[in-house]
Image (cartoon, rainbow, N blue to C red):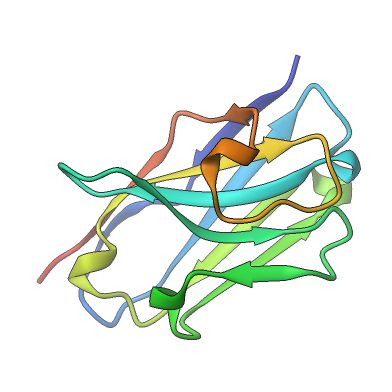
Length: 124
């Protein structure tokens, strides 16, 4: 059974960096497209970035503005989200989601599996 476990969140000052990890177990990661989503307090979940099964295709939300990088290591069953130049508005719970397909977009309705999330707080 597919399970996703996110980690790497925490409290960071504006301008700081964090690297989130999403470990996928129970399946072969090579077969799954992965997306990162986030949910701020009182708001709906929104797409941040997504990556194809091979890692050659990626997509980012407009608000990322070149600050984040998504990557994957299928041998380690792990997907990463490197976040730099963090802003207070990046605060929220970050989730990774998976779908048995080559590539999906930034709509969470395209994914069938998700983890419990990791909290990211950007504050001085």
